Length: 579
Image 1 (tube, rainbow, N blue to C red):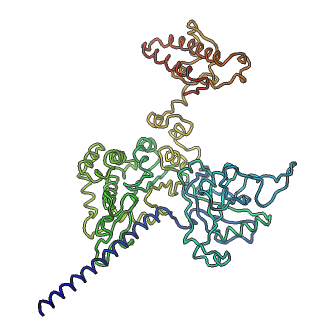
Image 2: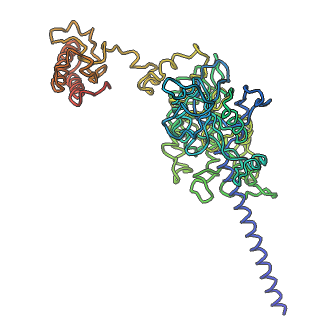
Image 3: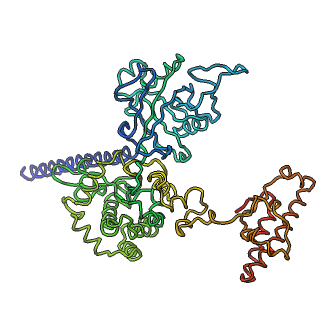
C-alpha cells in the first residue's frame, strides 16, 4: 500500500510539473508572439499624425474645427524644401474626383463642385492650383497620389471608406458590419520616389461631411500643413535610426562614407540603434526571468524581433542586440567627437560585406577582421560593451537604456526598418546615398548651401566621382556647340589650328548625337539614311584626325582607342545619343 501511495504521489507530482511546464511554455510562446506582433505593428503603423502636420477646413466655417482634423500623413512624397522654416503648407480649393483615381487617365472634367461648360459643351477641368479628394480603395495610395499629381493637383486628400471600430456613430450612420481597429498607414509601395506633393488620409466620417459639401456644389477650402526639415545657416543634423538587421538602409550604410566626409564641415551625423524595451514588452516575468528566450538579452530587458530574427532563426534577436551595442560603442569612441565617424562607416561596410550572413553574423574571427580593416581597437570596444553593463544576467546596460530613452523622444515611431531625420524632422525619401545627400543639402538655408552641394546636385553626371573629386566633370567640360556632328564645320588634317574651337572631347564620345532628323536640317533632306550615316562617319574621321594630330603627346594606343570609341558611336545607329 505504501509503495502504491508513493507511486501515485510520484505520478501526481510528475503530472503537476508537466502541467506547469506546459502552462509556462504556452505563456512564454504567447508573450514572444506578442513581441513579434509588436515589432510588425511598430514597423507598419504610426499614430494619427497631428504633431508634425495639420489639416483644417477654412471654408465653409461650419466645417472648421478648433484643433483641425485627425488624419494620416503619407510616408512618401517629397514636398518642396524651399521654406525657410520647418513647416510648409498649402491652402487651396478642394475638388472631389468622385473616383478612386486608380486609372492613370484622369478625367479632370468630372467631379464636384461642378464647373461652367466650355464652347464644346464639356465641363471645365479643375482650375489649378487645387487639392483633390479621391476615394480610398482599388489600388495603392502611391498610385492614387501619382495620378493626381500628373493631373495637376497640389495636394491630395484620400477619403477613407471604412469606419473605425471605436467610432460607434460612424458605424451606426453607415449601418456597416465591417470596421477597422485603426486607420491604415500610408506607406510607400516602393515606387513613390517620383511623388512631390503632400497627401493625407481623412477619416470616413470627416471625409463624408466634406464630400457632401462638395456634392452640393459648395466651395470648400482646406489647409494642409506638414513638417519640412528646418533650415540652418550653421550646420545640419542628420540622424539615422537603424539596426544590424535593417534591409532598408543597408546599402546606404555601406556606401555613404565619402559623402559623409564631403559634408563634414556643415553636417553632423548620428546613428542610433533601434531595440525593444523587453520589460515593457512583457519579456521578463515577475521573477526576472527571460521568457522571450533568444529574442532578448539581460534576462529579457533588451530585445529585437524582425523578419529575419524569429525564435528559431539562426540570427537571433539577442545577436542583433549584441551587434547593436557593438556599433554603439564604435560610434562612442570613433564618431561621437567629430560627428563623421570614418571608422564607424568602415566597420559597418566591412561587416555588411563579409559578416552579414547567418553563419558569420557572430563569428569572432570575422568580427576581428572587420575591426582590423576599419582600424578599430577591438579590445576597446569589448571593454565598452562590458563596462556599460554587458549583456548577461538581469543587469541594466547604460548604453542600451539610453537608446530606448532616445526612441521615446522621437517624433514618430521608428520600427525595424531604417528611419532618417533631418534637423529633427522625419525624411520621407528613400535612404540612399544620393537621396540623403540631397536631403542634407536641402537642410541649409537658401543661398547658404556649401559648394559641394551645388557641384554634385542632380545636374551632375557621375555622383560618386563628383563626391570623390569634389568636382563635377560634366559641368566643367567644354562641349561642341550644337548637339549634332552635322552642325560642325568640315575639317581635315591640315586644319589643326582650328582644333581648339572644336574641342577634343569628341574623342571620348562627348557632345555627339545623331538623333537629329532630316526635317530639322532642310539641307540634308535629299540624303538617304545610309548617306547620312556615311556623312557622319566621314566628318568624325576628319575631326578625330585633326584633334589627334594636336594631341601629339598621346601614345599610339590612346589614339587608336579614341578612334575606336567614336567609330563605335557612329556605326551602331543614326539615333545613338551622347554618352
